[in-house]
Length: 182
Image 1 (spheres, rainbow, N blue to C red):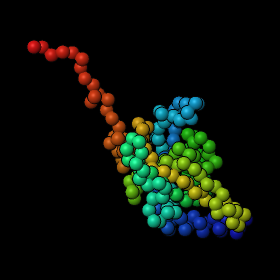
Image 2 (image 1 turned 90 degrees about the vertical axis):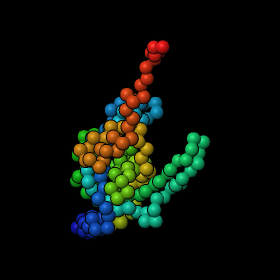
Image 3 (image 1 turned 90 degrees about the horizontal axis):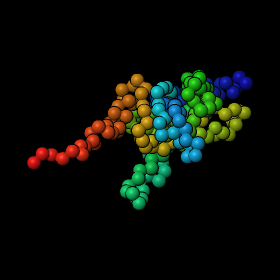
Image 4 (image 1 turned 180 degrees about the horizontal axis):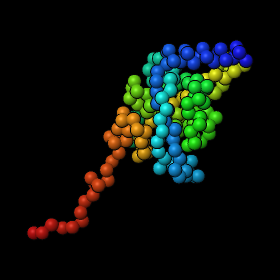
């Protein structure tokens, strides 16, 4: 067990040196639709700064730009590596997590370097496969987040400004059905 702790400490140190500080935003489920499995009224109220390593150094992965039926769609994927021990220490005690055992699909990662949000699509928890008989990291497969009127109130101005810039004020689009006088 002392070798496993040394191995895990070395990984944490490596992530702190070579990784980047990002914000982990857990999704707070308000009213989950049991048929579609989604929550249109979900919110992101908390943020945790944690170091993660960006696995793909050549740029975004994935399908990149796709021309579809309704126009151009951007698919930028990225893989983050985060220490299991650091995640458990900083984030796992949040009561809003769907499961506190690992990062959750649907949670967000805000990457300040690119000023972009990424939604976690899949959490790989068995890679590297039992080196030193341990699983020290999570690999988070993420895709660029498409904002759809979720509430983002973390208390960090750079993150909260995204909601202000992308939300639509419905009062701007009201019109009157009255006719003018002649």
